[in-house]
Image 1 (cartoon, rainbow, N blue to C red):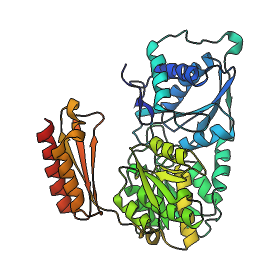
Image 2 (image 1 turned 180 degrees about the horizontal axis):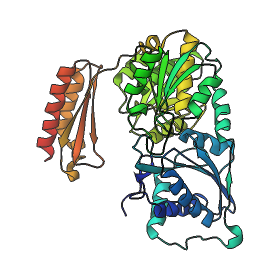
Image 3 (image 1 turned 90 degrees about the vertical axis):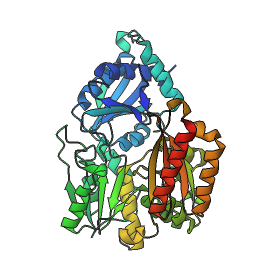
Image 4 (image 1 turned 45 degrees about the horizontal axis):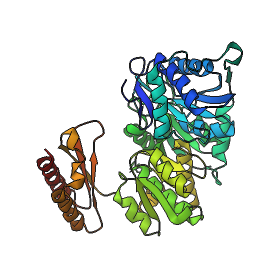
Length: 448
């Protein structure tokens, strides 16, 4: 058995990699690891709109019930709703069946603990170990202790109530275009914005089990750009399949990615004295333009490795209130413990209302610098050797010195391929391309 857990739960092609048999085993194993020495436990479970969701939910639930765990089924609901409702409903854990932005043939299983946080690497390793043992008799409950399933029909309304409490302004008079990716937010996103008084235009809100993320959503922004143009909307918001992230476009159809959103919302939080330590947490892939933009407002940016779970870990350890990724996973820790696309959308729109400015005007605080990525092909066993190579280190130092604080070099060994990724960032794209190619060739010559 290969490694089950990736950067965001277990994921694969449904019924081939992620089978009902595996889902059943994951249900049992997760319960055994998460609920050691607990007599009676309760888990909430939700899913996105993929056709394989029912199959995997049924198998997962069967595994949980067989070891005495009660299950509350929430139906189709965004991932961040699970993170919030696990606390509101007093559950011991939450499970989301979704493959996020991936095509319909994929599916995945994400776990949240009782705080609404994703599991640690060590906990995931424990679950994997139990699955690998393949012991079907594992913790099987006696008949009278088998778990039961209940359905919560009010889950979406509870999620809406929480979101509405995070903003002070209504959106009356605003024209908002949204693309729900035929995914988990196809009902909740338009419902939320209409409750706030906006005039809402919606596309890709008719899921059929196979059209989730298909030429739509946050990975295909042309759809939302066209809708903004057609409707003359003030802002367009595009969600991914499970709505834990969102990207925006302004009234001129220019993309507003996660870095711009963090800059705008970070300044808003600081104005309202809610940005603890005047710090934003981003990943190493965030554009240096974010650092330079918020520095003017005396806001610091701390960088973590790629993955919103690592952003959250840094935020929780130091009580920082805002963090996220360029891809649109934005965490507002005052309100939730994971990226929340709907929350991100209304916080961004509220910033427009508070300032009385268009999104284009708000986004003008930041300039996005060119990023050039070149791959150096290196043997797997040598991928980390650049760390101890003095010649490579000296060349990186020379490049960073040449960009004079308005650029950087980022070296990242691939986790799955025999590659070292060389990313350069700065003001002059042609110069960056030359320098990145030269550095990649140096790495190849030194490490092969």
